[in-house]
Image (cartoon, rainbow, N blue to C red; front, top):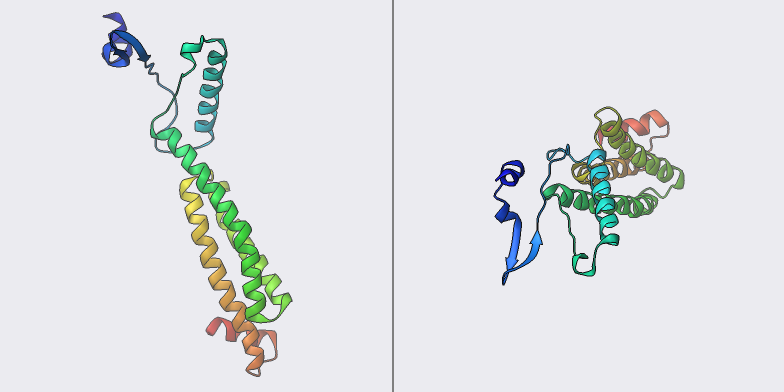
Length: 186
């Protein structure tokens, strides 16, 4: 009776008997991890839990080597966020050289293409840096998705500006001011 009151659930629901033999037992506990936000605290809790389970497994008999832990959707979100972040970083590694190549083809000017590529990187760094420093967001699921969108918009905008800047020279505009004005208007 005391076990049931302390666990907050029926203890029989926490144990699995198959053919009269105990096959599993679940242990529930509370943590300070927020379900709404996944941040560095969540990683620390998962790492502590993983290290604790691994330390117990090394001392356990062979029949108890199947100890598992889970944190519901919180730990699943960590794994998904980690994969999305890896995908975002891989996307950056691919998109920057591809953008440089497209800019070289569109502008036929390696100086403009280099500056435009620098602008793309700066836009992405500023937006994601603002999320981290000013708003306190760790790079997670939402930020990885937003990062891909930011890359797309920055590439699109910068490619069009760089192309029109170079096109202005073919339209007879020779000063930088005239070419910038032409690029922004068109």
